[in-house]
Length: 252
Picture 1 (cartoon, one colour):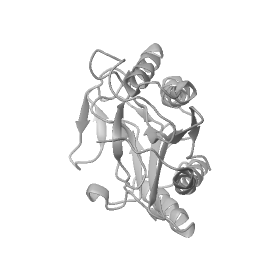
Picture 2 (cartoon, helix red, strand yellow):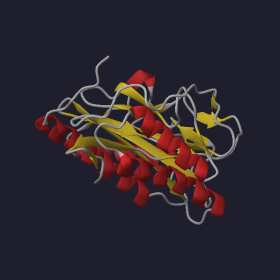
Picture 3 (cartoon, helix red, strand yellow):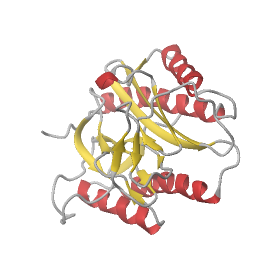
Picture 4 (cartoon, helix red, strand yellow):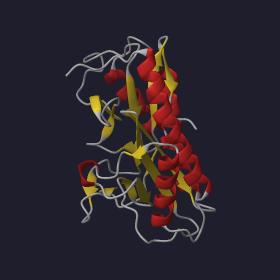
């Protein structure tokens, strides 16, 4: 399937949808405190999205029941909000999507609750720093496989490994479009596959494991953890390629 090239007016609409995502994530970050429940945080973000005229695009997507993926501690992605109340030393990932005027937004952050361990601080930093390192290096003509390899090498340089079998993706008039963008080189040739072009819009989302890249899906059929049973982290932005470089759309 061809990778869409978006016109400036389409990128403007994608920016509007993603700006709401960014605002919702900042709201969640500001309210990540000991004693608040995952369901309260989910409801708060959904209210914010709807107040700004958008729909929470994850709600009902593939059967997901909520507006926000709340991924607690060992859960790396796709966590379902529960009545669990945050405790000192937890880490929590928030992933949220929006739909506004037929265009989609998507981004994620991982946030510490109070004081966390040095290892958890490094774990969160790995996801965030990988994301921004990748964005800084995107240029027109680069292959997506080169971008995947770049992220894999950065993650491993920090002493962590990327979660396998899940990936970043194109975004536009659907929440998930071509291409798929793993956080590791799939295959052996980084010089193969499609090239990045002006007008492409896609989500990068490093998902970080400590020792084992193999994913396990828990009994609720959503929460994804690493086979090592250790904590993970996740960061994501939607970016558009404009004038040969990547511009982040999902900032508040």
